[in-house]
Image 1 (cartoon, rainbow over the protein chains, first blue to last red):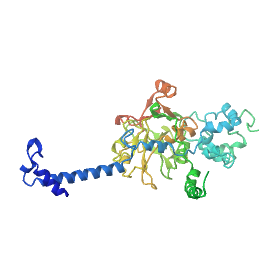
Image 2 (tube, rainbow over the protein chains, first blue to last red; image 1 turned 30 degrees about the horizontal axis):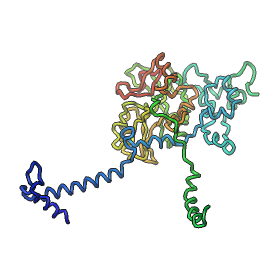
Image 3 (cartoon, rainbow over the protein chains, first blue to last red; image 1 turned 90 degrees about the vertical axis):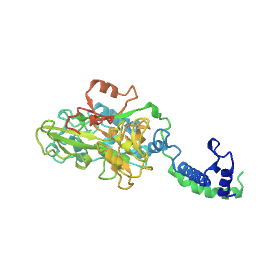
Image 4 (tube, rainbow over the protein chains, first blue to last red; image 1 turned 120 degrees about the horizontal axis):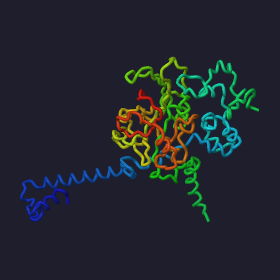
Length: 181
Length: 242
């Protein structure tokens, strides 16, 4: 049975219309039924396509894909964090926490070392060059807070590596001596 | 007991699965409860030395393309009153630090900038596909799998914190290191700030020192007149900073 003959049958039924008005009372009533059937098919296709393309988690927390949160949380880290460093290097922590660099975290100078923390045997960090490293923070600059210790490295050390005199983990010099043993 | 036929069937299956076994699945923070956190950041202008550690750390942690910055540092030189525009520079976002200042006198200071993780964020409101999102724990993120790259959000952000990733062609911004903070770590910039000028703040954690700081110090957000509900709290912020 085709849609058209079905439509005609419905249209010819005396009780088929709204409020007791038969569809047959409308001229060319099958057009309406045909349109309704076509609209229903389009609606069903639209709903199916929509259900297919909208991710299951969309709207879980708001107008976005809820799964995105877990995906973004799962990205790999590159900086292990000072807690990880301190587990294996408590000796450095002991030196550092007594000195002026107590608040400076390990990877701030040594760089991102999550791979080293995961596998200390195969990934070994490169020792930073103190000539470059220390100047990043301690080179004199007008915009730095006045209380922050600053030097003009060219005058202060004349190109000598800072660690010749200062121990980077606890850099303050006692009068007349080197901190580095 | 595995029959020969079964073993022959299993071998190709194992061969297909093996690369996935090697890849491993990244840790997805199973013990993290999003309802128990509300993240923001405290930035102390009087402590910033413009070393650029935060910018370098951010770039390394988040694979930020060269020449683009999720966080950056600006250097201000203010001579006049509030009407006079300040001199601001930020060479390469401050990733290599700052050269000596060409000025003398006046007010000189560094201001670290980043996404303010606004509560009523203009960028989230304009996204036509729901790719920019506001998490239940108060972080504004970009779902890069869903982003079309239409750049509405880049125009909408009043703080200039967004850019289009030149490789992925999707919007990118500071994620407040969501992959770190959900694992109990601090952000890469806070981890590497040598002076503590940046501090991650969990406003729902009663033990977080941020509450004591907010009670006892003067704190301002950027562009408060826009009522974006910014959660990057600046201490000692000069009125010339926009």
